[in-house]
Length: 499
Ligand code: FUL
Image (cartoon, rainbow, N blue to C red):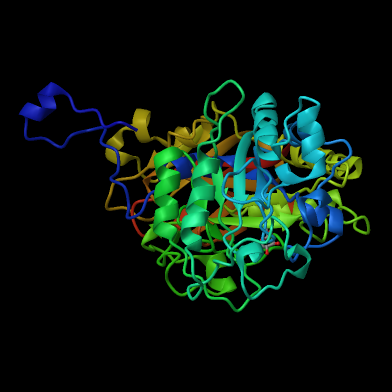
């Protein structure tokens, strides 16, 4: 909301009407605000592990191991787009160190394997990262990259006898005590990836860089997170940098799509400081120093990489994950790995489609429509056009209901045209101006008698409340019980059927 100040009001000593609330403490950068709205997207773990039936390969295979029989990155991107996923994040380099793009930084890349040589001889690209990026844009989804900071290929604590004497026997520069500068290698790899180009020469936009926090070795390596951030900012200012606890988005503390009801979008530590425990990452820190919202990385199967012995989870299970993640203001990054053909198994794509159908069947029942009658305990400066409660029904993420600055509690009520059966409530706080709300209730009214249906703490970007049983209502009342600054509500929705 852009404050409007008339020339006349500048001249007169009166309270200026139509003034938007000031931001409250930390607010999301534009890149983060856009990221919140992506909500659900795919993780793609693909590399040597796909062919060796491993999760954490020990950097023992040569690039010849990478030989998909029918690679089709279009099939991935189309499958994800059809499933309603906003994008995909590909493992350009997992812990084993083998690069999936045509890098100048290492010999340990798929480009040196026979599969790639045959592709190139046939006039085809063997750069899987660029191929996937081109497929993503073709099917209208976002593209992101995972680049593992822990690199077994360079870690002296991880013996690699199979590579001894080969061109892949590279200096063991990982670790603070090693001779060599691993941060420099990582920075060069990152630089290559954030400056990749499509075949037509234009630059490949990335929506997220995934800088994993895992390590399975005793080698201590202090990472130069600030430099990595600067490289990303300089070349991809719209990209979110994901790390264990920052910079732009944080881990949710587990890899099972599990979250807790109270979740703050802020924390108070950077990547260089002691790591939060899993439960602290889930909750976040209210009024923390940095806007670092949580993302849940979870899997459609048991492993991150494809294994013949595993099956996808059920659509019901994915729906449950969705409600716990997206329904609690946490983005869901769901891993859907390609198999040894280089394609996503049909079984997984079918499960994604079933899940999409369930999601849509559930969500596509909105009862609260723009022309309903809405009242509120207070409207900011009496300016209903700018801050009235009808804004929560207009479907516009930029408008919101607001009260005067000195009011941190209050209510709004939406009057339905007759009795309805309601089984879910969706609430959105206008996070563009910060996360403020710490307590709220929703009541279902029938002829003025109310029944409590939601009792919440944090709200944030989006909350979906699936009620244990449907309730009858001819009105919906949202009460804000606690807020650290005047609350701003951008959307209220109820799902169900008209009776
Ligand atoms: C973890 C890694 O160790 C797993 O292999 C996987 O990549 C997962 C997404 O992150 O930290």
